[in-house]
Length: 418
Image 1: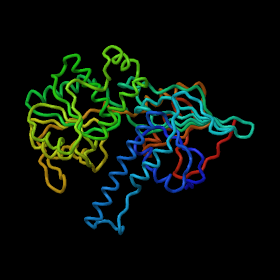
Image 2: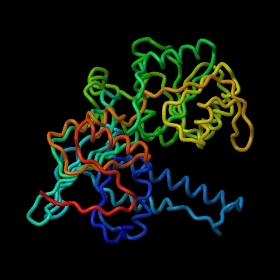
Image 3: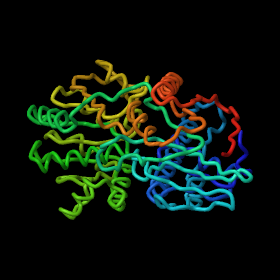
Image 4: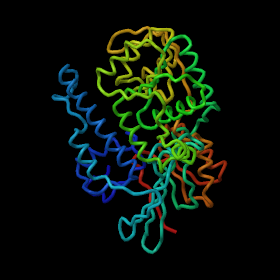
């Protein structure tokens, strides 16, 4: 394992917790240098880390109160203070800006189109007298996605690390507006509410954007929309500060209307716990967007307790549901689930949509790879389940004729210059 004190620079591709979540611990354990990323990712990372630290502190306190932890006392992985210290070490790089980190190391970040601020990182090194380029894809977004630009093309690199989250999957063809409008209209006609467990970064804002489009086209009634997640509220407001990073279509909406494209009519941000609980007494058609996206915790749980037993309501999943989560159980047709240890009957309609995914599928990854004019010396397929990584590596080799390798954890690879 790398000793944090031996590292000179850290580069972040984007602000999702699986990419930034260990940063406060890394800094607490001895890293003192800068953390480079885009301006939007810098702000999103601060939100993400403070939220994660708060949750860990709550979990540790609860474990100590109930006495179920094997650690005495149970401690959070890192504290709010650790997260605040990590935020102070964040530094900004604009898209396309070339930054010399040292005499022989140069970095450029270009748009990955995955979430706001996400980047593909290009590192140019001089290995003695030989130049060496390494590109890290980070998480790649989808082509023609709402709000965000397509993943940036590249011409060449010596070595490439490419993600493979959906390396063995194709997203189904789905008409997002048509499907969502049908779900909302059917639910409203029977007097029910639509409850959407959604991730705070990206998924919530894309959903709001699509709802704004549908309201503008009179495809759905002007129902009240409630965003009931403090983190999602903060992120949505942050999106409105980065309209310059949106795609042409979303920027045109702003130019035509003067309104932030992720804010729709009749939108209400829910702040306090009391306001959140007050939604439970509302029995008119509305849309409630809340976290967590897999229904593992957060305010979504009390909405499910109150809305699942009513057949007029609909629960819509728009993100990946991991095995063993309440979200997966509901998608699989469970007629009863437990929340806070109590059984909850499932009578509401359960729906899911795949078109909101922010990850490129295998075809879209291949499309991005095809933008390179020459093959890398080696393409390392990473960030995926073993089956997904192996499948993508095979497809790259067969379709593009590139040399690929799926590295093992802690495997050491020597990279050579031109």
